[in-house]
Length: 336
Image (cartoon, rainbow, N blue to C red; front, side, top):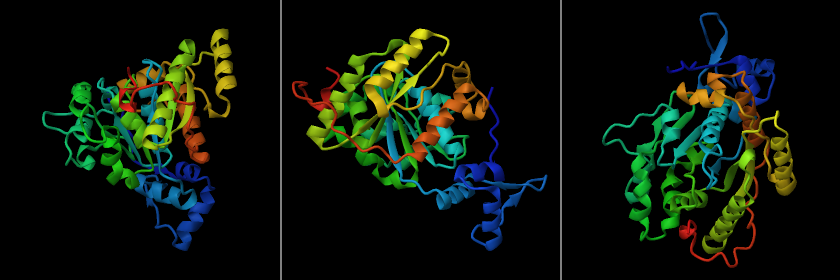
């Protein structure tokens, strides 16, 4: 089953995106600052995505941001977060490019992107020096949300680029031409600290780290922060780490205890948590982020809150993190 997506926004939705009253938008239209809105059959004002984005940009301009969603542990909610955060940001009038860097290609399938033989994917960005990233971008059914898809054969890209010149910066260079075309680039990383993950961290200024509270691992966070420190010291690229507790079950005391431990240890770098919700599992089956598929669900509310938090705050400043002394190895070999 494929969910039908409404291709327009109402006056109330656009006013909420822009953080203004509906009357203010009407006044801007009457003064000629905004072109007259189109009307639906019920004679209500409606806006397509580009119109909504323009209004949001006038009312609440924001700095373009590049965020890697990363954790070397599998099953913590990286793809779920990339998928649903991208949808929540697009629903708020931001233009988003979601990049699938996981050979499992779950983000690609969740967005309903189907690749035929010969269609380019994210692999070409790594292995073809002359490849233009724009040629791999696919539009999704969600207004404002585009995707660079992945194939399972991405798993072999590490070997192909192992001896490449400046191999850790390949993705950064390939994404340079498209950065100014999107408000957010969200990179869904594979469950390891491989060369592909290092490329994602080098290409981004921020990293969002989902942490499953039931399997909270200090070592995993330590390994990641050491990798970030190596990237900063060896390549001069700083990455600001933020942590996102996921799969929080308020009925379980242990989950709450772990959540408090996360907040106590990581303090202001912890983002509002994501609660357990079966709708987060159902939404990819409908090929639509939870905010579109189940807009009243806990998952939709939590990812909406996360999107609003990111839009409200200034981008975090990259930090060096813990000393990488004694870590050994180059960033590209962080996986051991």
